[in-house]
Structure formats: C-alpha cells, structure tokens
Amino acid sequence: MGQPAPDLSSDVRVVFGAGSRASVAAEVRKLGLSKALVLATPHQHDAALGIAEHLGNLAVGVFCKAEMHTPVHVTEAAMAHVIETKADCVVSIGGGSTIGLGKAIAYRTGLTQVVIPTTYAGSECTPILGQTENGVKTTLRDPSVLPEVILYDAELVRTLPLGMTVTSALNAMAHAAEALYATNRTLETTALAVQGLKAFVDGLPKVLQDPWDLKAREETQRGAWACGTVLGQADMALHHKLCHTLGGSFNLPHADTHAIILPHAIAYNARAAAKDLTPICDLLGGTNAGTALYSFAKSMNAPLALKELGLKADDLERAADLATMKPYPNPQPVTRDDILALLTAAWAGDTPIE
Ligand code: NAD
Image (cartoon, rainbow, N blue to C red; front, top):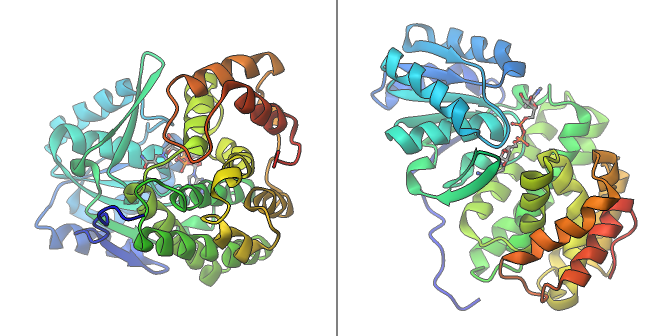
C-alpha cells in the first residue's frame, strides 16, 4: 500500500449479456472498421463460423488454429491470413489461447481486437502477452495488446465442460487472490479482487448445479472480468511463478495447474500475509486462506494432485530449482526447500502446509 494507484480506468468497451455476440457486426462498424478476421481454436471452429455469420460481409476470413501458450509459428501462419485478407481488425472467440493469438497479431500490426471470451481465464482484460518459441515462453506487457471491445455472452460459456468450468474459475480466482498481497496493491485493486472472488464463490456452485443457468453464468463472467482486470493491474507472485514454471517447462495444462497450486501457494503466503488474505477467509470460512481454498476446490470437484496431470515424482526437484531460480517478489521468502515441500504436497494432493 502507499504506492501510486494504478489506473483502473481504460478505454476498453465491456458489454455483458446473453446473446451479445449478435452485436459483433455493430461493434465492428462502430469502430469504423469493415474487414474482420475471426480467430478460434480448431475445437471452436463452429463457434467461429457462427461469429462470421453474424459479421456477414464484414468477415474477411476465419483462422481456427489457435493453440495454448501462443506458439510463434501459429502467429506467423495467422499473420499470412491478415496480410492476404487485408484485415483491419480481429475478432477472437474462445479462451486464453485464442485471445493470445489475437493479442500477438495486435502486437505485430496494431490491429483492433474485438474479443468474445468463452472461459474465465481473463486474458481479455490484460495488456499481457505470453508467447512460446523453441519451447521457451516469454511474457511482455504492452498497451497495444489490450483488446478494445469485450463481449461477454453467457450463452457461449454454457458449453464449457464442467471440469474446465471449475479449473478456469479457480484460475481466475488465483489472479484475485495474489492481488490481495501484491506489492503495488491499492484499496481499488483489493476491492476489485474481492468483487471477483465473491462472484465465483457465489456463482460457481449455482453454475455446477445448473450449467445452463444464464444468470449464474453471467455472474461468473463478471467475476472473470474483475479477476482479469486486477491481473492486468497488480503484480503477481509465487502462485503465478509456480504455474508459469509447471506450464512452461513441464507442459502441464494451464487451468488445472492453477486450480491445484492455488491453495498451496496461498497457504505458503498466509505465513507472511494472513491479514491481507482475510477477505478469502471471510468469503469461504476458516482461519487459513489456503486451506479454505483447498476445501472450496475439493467441494467443487477440482483436481487436487499434480500427479493426476502426469507430473512425475522425479520432476519435483527440477521444478523446485526452476521456480526458485528467479523468483517473483513474494510476501513470504522463497526458499528451495520450502518450495519443494509445497510442490510435494501439491503433487500428492495433500492439504496445504500451513
Ligand atoms: P484455452 O483457451 O486453451 O481453452 C482450452 C480448450 O477449451 C480449447 O480447446 C478451447 O477451444 C476450449 N474451449 C474454450 N471455451 C470453450 C467453451 N465455452 N465451450 C467448449 N470448449 C471451449 O483455455 P484458457 O484456460 O482459457 O487459456 C489458457 C491460455 O491462456 C494459456 O496459454 C495462458 O497462458 C493464457 N492466459 C493468458 C493470460 C494473459 O493475461 N495474457 C491470462 C490467462 C490465461
């Protein structure tokens, strides 16, 4: 606290509403643009065609080869389409992988992005771009990658499988949890983080009870917006470092890894930042924010053990080495032995070490 407040205002236009994807053509026209390249993963090809239909003659192409961690070779293939179609904007429909591709194009061209998120990962709200080349993932922050328009359409997130609904929600909650003790936190970022956490604590059980409940889906999307926005504003610490290491060097799936690590990283930091983490105990009950998150994740049927994701026991020593080599600033001092103990508990699915 006590540092200058990050600027929480921005020119991003954010629209919530079931069916809001139908306004995509109007949004593109409002921006004075007329040549949209639609982006998606292969899995969401049909959804991309649906958006192209809504765009009508404003759509100049559909590129459905987005992949996790934004590989540069995929961006280069997409760039060939941008040039060939003379696109003046991209419309990204999907999760963080598709949105990452749109950001990578915007970074290279300055093109405007209209984003229609279908997970809770929150990339649409950040000026952050992670890209992978030759097996190495690097991350940059640049205003040019922040999308201009976000359309949150609750109808689209209903098809997110239940398992991914839970892990993606915990991924979003992790952004907010780490913002509570971020070195550059302010009263504003803390309020936004609590708003995001509350939306998931209230909304996720309702979504699991009825995945087609549009009101509950929208509540969780509002949580994704709050958590993603706070990720763009507040510095991240141990939790994100561990997930970047496990994703980047051991190819573990993004949302599942966040879901498993979150209670352990928060319990670790509760040793030094228990007071800052009080809002989590207030929302979930209990006296330790990490164990409270563990119980919440368990009650939502989240995966709990890294070994379930295919990480080998033999990999733990190397993971501890890599995660402690260049640690992010963190409230609790980071030591290799402590991180190895944390990872061992997360690997086995044990309750977090307090
Ligand atoms: P994802 O975009 O990789 O999606 C996972 C799979 O689910 C894909 O096959 C996708 O097509 C499918 N899918 C997505 N939404 C669906 C829906 N509604 N119905 C059915 N299938 C659906 O997953 P993610 O977790 O959203 O994104 C992970 C990527 O995003 C990682 O590369 C991560 O680094 C990045 N990310 C970046 C930021 C940032 O600020 N730069 C923030 C969060 C995540």
